[in-house]
Image (cartoon, rainbow, N blue to C red; front, side):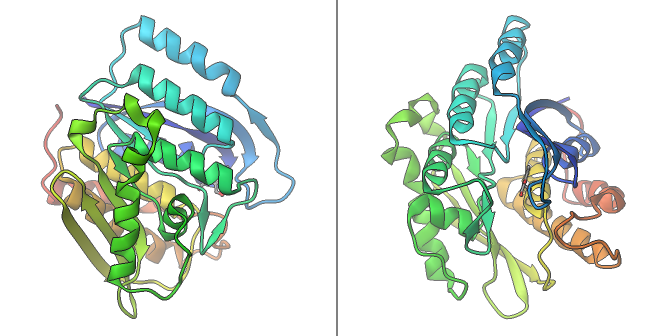
Length: 297
Ligand code: PXL
């Protein structure tokens, strides 16, 4: 069975980060190991949440795994609370990764043209250097803009997204600290939440090794739920681990998020709380099989 390490916070209440990645990766048939970077009472869309940083534990945990000679088939990163923590996570990835470890970075830090509370431009630049060491990165348009200094637009065309993809693809060569990566592998650069026509939304991607672009659109549900980015990146990781191509993986994740939002609309819960992914997990497993997932490896 493939083993995936996810590095992000535990938001005890509020359906995001580890509390969604762990069940999704497990349901998709891979082992999910967690490295919790902080523990919060809720995610940061609530007010008065408590937060305890766990940065001082991370190296001790990782060193133990290294002594145990643990191998990770993938390392997935999500929301990281501070700039310093991103730097630490980069070092830990360098220690833990082998040439066959897939590093998937979700630079979870903003949406709708704005960074989340607690983050600034310096934080976004540090996330850009984390993306530089990834094999796959999955920012949304807001995150892509903050990492590349491209002004955010809510009206755009395919050329604007291609420009963003191109700039994200240059992050690695522009970053001196990215020498821990295995550059021969190239990167899959994916931007989420790309709406190329009225009533549609989806993803666009670029494979830097081949120069090949990928685009997928499906019907847009006009509501923005918290935590969908975490679900998206977790499903991409789970699908890649089951042998799907990167294009099929990003498409499956887009379809799954759309279906989950559709189901959540029936719930009176406020959109900032989180989506009802628990209800759609059985469908996800079927979608994965239908997309041709390989058996256990
Ligand atoms: O969904 C990303 C996320 C993860 N963890 C925490 C958050 C957020 C987004 O706001 O606040 C603590």
